[in-house]
Length: 85
Image (cartoon, rainbow, N blue to C red; front, side):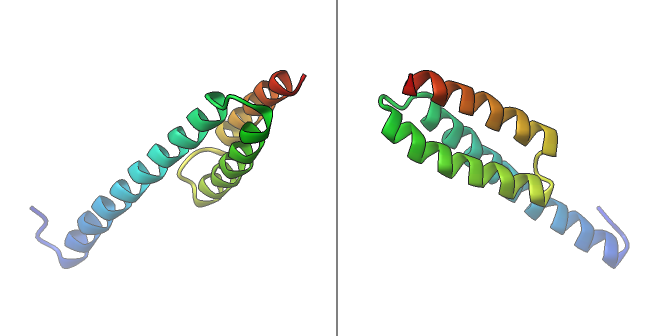
C-alpha cells in the first residue's frame, strides 16, 4: 500500500492504463482474426482497413511497438493478396 499521495495516484493510473491496454489489445486481436477468417476478398478488404487503422493507432499510443504493427500489417496484406488472386 503506497504511503505517498503521488504513489497512490500512480498505482491507480497504472491500473487504469493496464485495463485500457488489455481492452485495446483484445480489440486488435479480434480485428486481425476478422481479416484472417474473412470468406471473400471484399469482406477481407473492409476488415483490413479497420485492422490497419487500429494497428496504427495503437502503435502511435505505444500500446504495441511500431515494428510489431508493421509486421502485422505486412502479413495481413500478404494474406489479402492471396485471397484476391
